[in-house]
Length: 263
Image 1 (tube, rainbow, N blue to C red):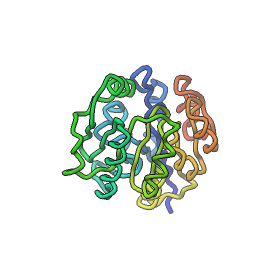
Image 2: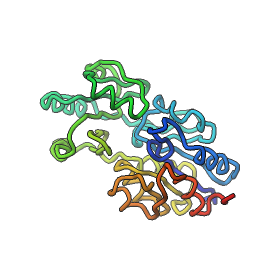
Image 3: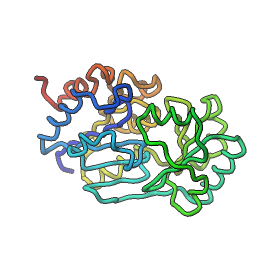
Image 4: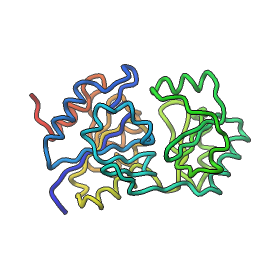
């Protein structure tokens, strides 16, 4: 093992604040400071696909590792080093179930995403997270590898789908919906691969997150931090709690961990 350290950051509501549609200035300055330390690597661990990362364009230069789609695709130094599509027969089962329950759902491919239908509620949901509305193509899965599916659904119905899709991972959002990805996959699995590739001890790994899809990551990494704006469940799984994203949460968390100095 080498003595390098690595920090994994979630994006939405950790680095990126959807209310201001941007990254807090204090977070940008904190990442600049981290980047000056050659013994620290900065990584992204997100549920988004790489083509959805326009919202962090101004900090991409500080980052060389991207764990995307909850661990399904990993990119290092601009090269895809791991990809894990959902088996096609399982995708078809999910589609059939979504259709049976008349849900609004979508597909994430490696380079594109699509929806089955679009309505005003769906448009607003994408606007809230500053994402371009995907095109409509309910048959996208027939000719493309699918790395994640998702659906709008009331939270009290999530258990039904979790039970039905027992061979897959069903991860709830903070809002009204959930993701479906390959069984056993999560940000944690992507992080394990990166730690092995980079030959970095888990004791030298750090993670910042806020949502339920960060739980495995927060559990796995001993130096884990949850934002104060995070879900109550995520907070229970992190070792440390930092302040709200609107109150310099990332900066304060990095200072408290001794990874950067306070000015």
